[in-house]
Amino acid sequence: MDKDVDELEMPDERGRPARADARRNVDALLRAAMDVFAELGVDAPMRTIAARAGVGVGTLYRHFPQRSDLIKAIIRREVDGCVEAAATLVATREPGEALASWMQRLADFVATKRGLGPALHSGDPAYQALPDYVHGQLTPALRSLLDAAASAGSIRADVDAGELLFAGLRLAMPASEGDTGQARRMIALLVDGLRYGADAPDKAKPR
Amino acid sequence: MDKDVDELEMPDERGRPARADARRNVDALLRAAMDVFAELGVDAPMRTIAARAGVGVGTLYRHFPQRSDLIKAIIRREVDGCVEAAATLVATREPGEALASWMQRLADFVATKRGLGPALHSGDPAYQALPDYVHGQLTPALRSLLDAAASAGSIRADVDAGELLFAGLRLAMPASEGDTGQARRMIALLVDGLRYGADAPDKAKPR
DNA sequence: CCAAAAGCGGAACCCTCGTCCATTTGTCGC
DNA sequence: GCGACAAATGGACGAGGGTTCCGCTTTTGG
Image (cartoon, rainbow over all chains, first blue to last red):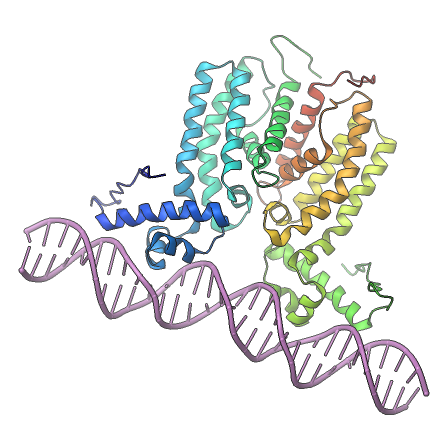
């Protein structure tokens, strides 16, 4: 709860080390935004977030010109965590198993952040930066898992990482508040689809 | 283009046959809403729709108190079409094939209506009536297909119709404007997941 | 301690929503 | 036809959120 939000150096593009009060405010804004988003969803009024952080709306817009900038800052660590998890899994687990585990982790990430899923897929241009970032980071991570599993013959080889990521993100959006079970089952079903036409190391049965 | 929007009798809950101008305005509003939604998405300003229909906003709100009422009226026929398609398919095609075809039809329906997908899954209480209606109509339709396929042994028997419908609707949301290919592939993958644990290709085998 | 630069805050403006009600219009009995 | 009544209309209005702008405050470096 009192853990620091890290990444607050903000050296600014042009050399300067950034002012102390500015760093403090950015920190307060990120904390406030996390709370408010969790409470009211990602469409919560900007005023509310600024007020919760104890700053004026001007300050909020100064640091986060777009609502998506704020969301992006908040989810960056989560996404980075997924990327690291992929590296760990691919190195330590059986390829098909690693893929399945990672997809479940992805589901947990999306399902946990209330309103994030809809925002990611709204198609609203204001949020375009979000899917761009998430896909840019996660597609290579998933591709490494997918390639490993395909090479091992655990799954079919005709599936694109970007598309599968998309599908996973879609399925992970919870049906209702806090329902992770359904999302997990549907993602497991999708992964079974990957296995369906596999060459197979131990159970071969192509079409 | 000049085809009638049907279902304009509107006998009103209590007997009366409804006034002529009211029917005309409802018709105009539905046409306008279809246009405007297609152009600007389902979040388009209500004023725009009213203006396009040549009526005041008061009239719009009178006939459609909630934005979702308007959307619901527009998609009702699509949904009904899907329900009928399920009945036809289950009667004329091999069960597994019927299921796969219907899921694709579902995808086409969702992908075609710009902004509908996000609205369905936004979680916004204002739109709650939409998923309620869609699920209420389509779940039984899908269940009939699912039961037929499971009885035939084409697919595993442990999947809930409501959950699969949810998954299909999620996956059908297009990645980008007019991209139905990706959605179709991912839904095909999901259906393959249903086949993965199947007992047999053509003999019944309830667990 | 001082001055310049960076940051702050919130009033102001614009846009949209959804309501409300005075006016208009359709319908039905005569 | 015609009048009276109810239904329907449409736009003005108040509430509230988004974003900008600019005078004031704080920090920082010398």
